[in-house]
Length: 262
Image 1 (cartoon, rainbow, N blue to C red):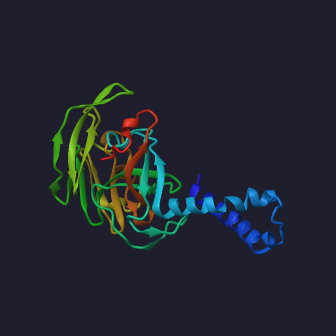
Image 2: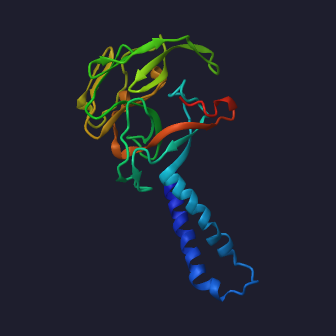
Image 3: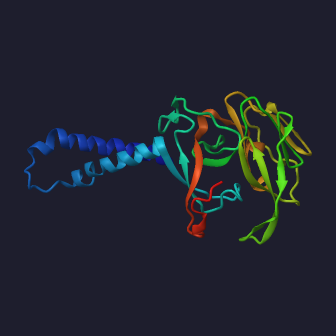
C-alpha cells in the first residue's frame, strides 16, 4: 500500500472541498447554520491532513520494524522515527530530490525503497558508498582494502528463539555499533539474484566482493547471517533513499527500548 499516494489524494480532495467552502458556500451560509456533512467530514479534515502530509513528507516519518535483520540494533516491534530531510528534500510520492543537504555516510541506518519492489520500505546499515570496494569475506568486512575493526563481546541471546549468536562491536566510519554472526551459517551467498550492475560483484566460497557504482549504496543488516541485503539483491540507487533512522519512540513489548537507538 502506497500510503504517501493515498495521503496526497486525500489532501487534494479535502483541500478542494475546503477551498470551495471558503470561496463560495461559507459566505452565503447563515452564521448559526449547521455545516453540511461534506464540509464537516471533508473540508474540516483538510488542516489536519495538511499538517500530517507536510510532517511525513519533509520532516519525520514513523516506521515499524517488521523483521530481525537489524538485531541487536533494532528489534522486531520497535517503532522508529526517520529523518526525511537529512539526505535532501524530496518531492512526496515520486521521491525526486529537489534540494541537496547531506549524503549518506558509512554506518548510517537508512530507510530506502527496496530495489526489487519499490512499494516496500527496507532498513539496513550503509556499508559502501559510491566507488567503494566492499568485501565481505569469511564474515569479516573490508572496505577499500582496509579491514573494518571489530571487537568480540559476550554472545547475544535471542530471547524468543532461545539461541545464541556471536556478538561484536564494529567501527564503521564514525559509528560504533553491534553486529551478530551465527557460527553455523555458511560464509558464501547461496542465492544472489541477477540485479543491475551485478557485474560489479564477484561471488566466491568466502562471500562477495563488490565495487559500488556511482549514485548507489551497499547496505547490510546488523544481523549478518539473517539479513537479505545488498549481498543478495544488489545496490540501492540514490533515488530510492527515504531517510535516516535516528530514534526508537515505542515498543509495546519493552518500554525500556524507547530512546535506546545507537
